[in-house]
Length: 224
View 1 (cartoon, rainbow, N blue to C red):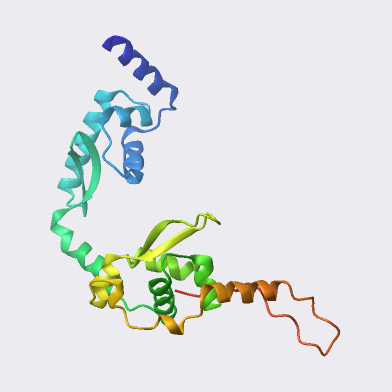
View 2 (cartoon, rainbow, N blue to C red; view 1 turned 135 degrees about the horizontal axis):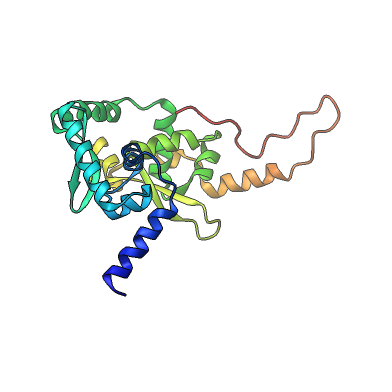
């Protein structure tokens, strides 16, 4: 295929996209981009000629610089993307570090202990051990970089989780074998599954006066 033919096809693709105001369209696309975008990709997205897109990008970058915005538009490695302005890096650093240094809740600490001693383990098994829904707490631990995904269970397909090297660094050990001897105090997973299975097969509650059967699954989501 000749270069001219390729250019004609690219132009045709751009014309298929409804044309909106160029600069706001570029800002909207760049705002959600997770990697630098080249001029051709942006032109295709917003439906404008490449040369107009390049000119608009340069003007936007100049305007952000003149207004001393907290971010800037840079052309790096052949692509355009928003970046935090270097002058305000210390503000961003303080924000990130404050979030990392905030104390974990008791619920998060207990969930983290279960993962540390039973890893790799699924959310469902952590919930079974703790007796509550731990989805919210697990999201917090993932965001804080203390746990990470570790493949999936070959039988159920459930995601498995383990602690990270950052977790070891934070508690001051070099390996999981240095963790305190707390594992014997956690219920055995096989025993837990047998107990839960027995509860699930119990008959429905009888007449008034008899105790109802215990729930077979944890209920309610714990706050992180």
